[in-house]
Image 1 (cartoon, rainbow, N blue to C red):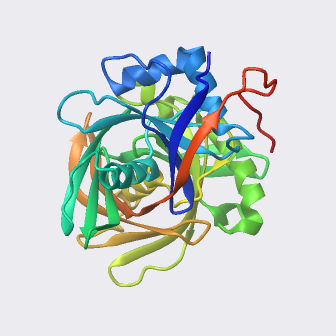
Image 2 (image 1 turned 135 degrees about the vertical axis):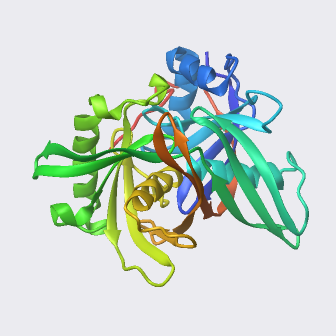
Length: 338
């Protein structure tokens, strides 16, 4: 049974929405955030709440948000279950950036007027940090410090409606297929978005259950979450400049440069030798918004060479909602039209 009212605080990060439910009106049991996500997937009431907030008339096909939950232990400030119209994500960089801004600006985490503070967040893929930077009492930027990220597999042949393509899989909290838009004669621009969505869905579904898309230690993180199309925009001194669009879940489009996807791209670029010390990734979105990515270090994960990525961006509050649920409304929890 859905609650009569649901309160949310909404942000956008680089144009991508993030709807925060600080007090979810349904139980979300579990010892860890990963367990809570697994339980939410099987819980009809939680799925109904997710659908209500994503679907029309309260949301839309590309809506995104999160339920705030307790952290795994006292080492983090909060936990979060990320969701979208098709289910629950394992990672979300733009959402973590928004949560950092929200936690500081709401007073949940104390912060200086000038300086920085770490907001530590437990997500299904592990423990991440939103390093919130402040100037004169205003939040001005957030560094998303993610879990270790690595190249999963290279040179995977994928049969599509445009012929056989070659993709690279990389993990940045979730597994992404990445490939240049030029490989299909397209660019990451709004006029080509329909084609990029259609092909991105094909690639994701073709690789989702492949042996290469298995996480080495946690099967809950297996499978391909999305397809990242990118354009090369030149490499000025000390910088790699790319534009991307991430088509995730079942055809959803990330309006931002994608936080966890940027981490996956950092892993690929590092493995290619394109990120020597001090080099940053300037990662633009299809809208023109920008994240900046850099490497904080390297380490081995289950015998794989991984990077420790940081992605910098900013989130802005767009408003608050008190959603109502009329028990006589025949269209609850809602609908999605594409």
